Image (cartoon, rainbow, N blue to C red; front, side, top):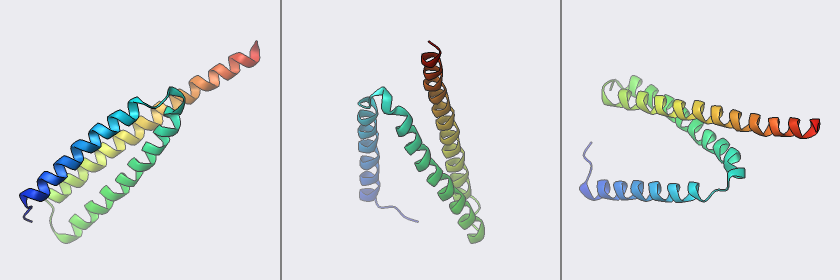
Length: 107
């Protein structure tokens, strides 16, 4: 597969803009909205996991077991790290909120 240089530059530019936009968006989110935002990020990562599994199946059936399989494996590992980390952070934040509610009722 041959990638034209203009398509590659456009893709890199779009990726860089997405990084800057994501950083600006995350830094502007108030702390009370981090848990719902993390849940949304987990949903997107779950879609990435399904896509990586689909890609690995296509690579296996197509006979191309070299590059596509390794890329699918890397995508699967990174997406699963994001999902597990997101659930861990969400659980910790919900436990902190629940702890405050329990302490508030006891007083």
